[in-house]
Length: 252
Image (cartoon, rainbow, N blue to C red; front, side, top):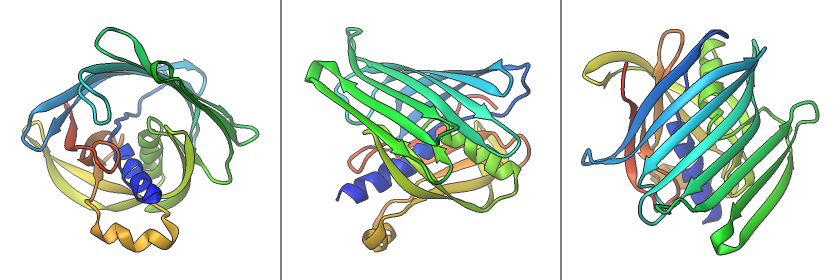
């Protein structure tokens, strides 16, 4: 069951948006999560900016209702990443999640040594007296929740159709996955028809791989033309018991 839950967590990671831009630009964007009845669950504002040659900072602010938390929550996540000609690599993440009273109910930190292919990740829930730290050694390109969308854009930019990666999740843990380009199709976003690539993440479940046939599908869409912007997502919000949702950009 643990691998099954992680499969659903991994495919939900396609939900998180990204854009490509020149080094001089600061990009602001917004996106909203709705349940299958169209009711808003949460909204997000994000900004991506260049802070030094080849290094970028993404700041994401979210407020609303999210699976696995009781009541209204909010969070602020700051991720630094490196973007080169061939790939995108995470450098660090600091994410703080707050309850309605402004108390920090969870903090996630991830730090990556790009030269040594290692990472140190922590997960703290101070009100529940939970603290976990794990260190990982990577033998493939590594992605995180926020960096996966940027990696997917570079993946499309380089004309790839599949690639095996390793993903660090919030527990924290490390999983082998495969990023796949399923095909091209026309979708409707904010009343406009857009040509898009449909992508999925296929985690390695080992002996449980047959289970994937019976699971709900989760997909993300990126524009089919440069700059391959993220457009939307449909699937589970998080783990195995989370809401089925749709997340789409607010403006085209």
